[in-house]
Length: 168
Image 1 (tube, helix red, strand yellow):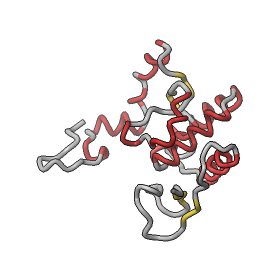
Image 2 (cartoon, rainbow, N blue to C red):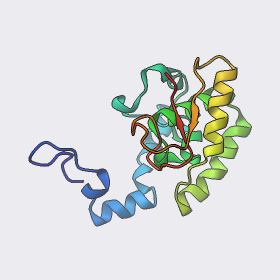
Image 3 (tube, rainbow, N blue to C red):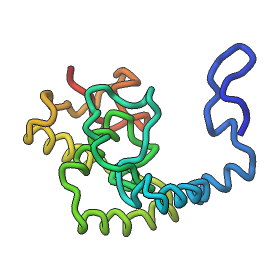
Image 4 (tube, rainbow, N blue to C red):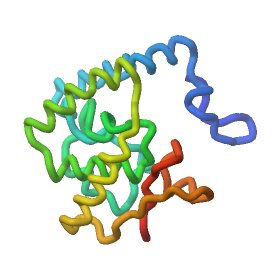
């Protein structure tokens, strides 16, 4: 992978930094195979919230860190990279609150088509996560469904359309 910043210090998108081999490994998720060592060592679980970069970890969503990180998770099978960090955190916290063997098996089954056919954002699962977290008192503000243009890029999903906006 090429450097993260250009000569002027501007960030270069990951997609523009990958080599042909890197793009192949990422597209088939083969870059995740080294995580199996972490699973065997007991540092990670097969299913659980994926680790986020500190800059992508919303401060009010630290409850997602209560579960051991996993190779795959609820947020990954509900949209993965197509979901904003805030909505990903809500999906992860929903998983932590609803974790069960049955849910883990469902996630493992849904992981196969996600790897084979790519990530598809599930707006209904995102709405359900926010609704359930609000009903359980986990979050104090219910996000609003946002269909209007011109919303803040950091408050909505990058894919546009039927996004969730975090209410302050």
